[in-house]
Image 1 (spheres, rainbow, N blue to C red):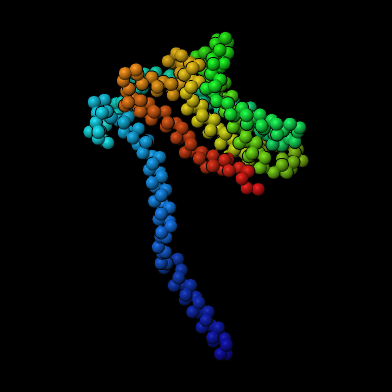
Image 2 (image 1 turned 180 degrees about the horizontal axis):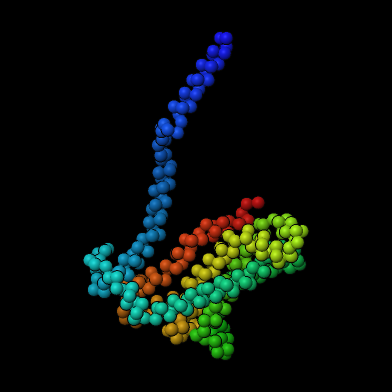
Amino acid sequence: MAQSTIAQTATVSSVKRRQESGPGVPRPERGLRPRTLITAAAAWMLAAVFLLPYAEMIITALRPADELRDATYLPDEFAWSNFVNVWRDSNLGANLRVTLLVAAGSTLLVLLVALPAAYYTARMKYRGRKLFLLLVLVTQMFQPTSLLVGLYRQFYQLDMLNSVWTLILCNAAFNLAFAIWILTAYIGSIPIALEESAMIDGLSRFGALVRVTLPLALPGVVTALIFTFIAAWNEFVMGLTLSTMPESQPLTVGINSFIGNYTVQWNYLFAGSVIAIVPVVVLFAVIERKVVSGLTAGSVK
């Protein structure tokens, strides 16, 4: 009897302790550690260093023309009409359309070529595989600037200057190597047993690629897509050399037209720059998680 009474008393006391420490009773919070505070402060300072140029760009884009030389950080009034004027009085609309076509077209062309090449390289053990990857890496080392004279002469003879297709082909060619490397690493990290199981169930190799491998390789595909799109969007030298007419030039070259021989329209220059970065920032913010997982593919076995 004494043992049963002691056991009941212990059970009741444990139940009371659990009730007192339940979700309804707040627990004392631990203070922030100095290491956490220092890390957070350093992160905020680093973020401020990277964000301040963009803040300055937006503020300058909203400055009136008569306040561009003032030493104040903020203008007396914000000239929102700068964005309207830069769109109305220049070829910025046509330049934006050309840039969208070039970036989207070159990205699509790169994915159509890089996906089969990366899949075959990752899955097939053929003679010369390492040499092929080495050649792909070597092509990535060539800068467009060193090939501009030959490219200009070639497209001049083909009568393809001032053409959107010319810029699409050039941007796709210079971004193809990076896409093949990224996709090869990601597809190689996917177990081949998944495709073999799908083919046992009746799918062809192409069907297994489309239904099994591509959905799993989506982060790598998105990584290649975003990097190719951004590279084509920000390209300047080839657009300046291969497009001589203002309405056929990409956005990066169109913005450069606000820099004159004797004056620079800083408010219009920065207003056009703000318009140019908005689509890329939105695209990157939407698929940022896929990009991070695609870049870390193959880092852990």
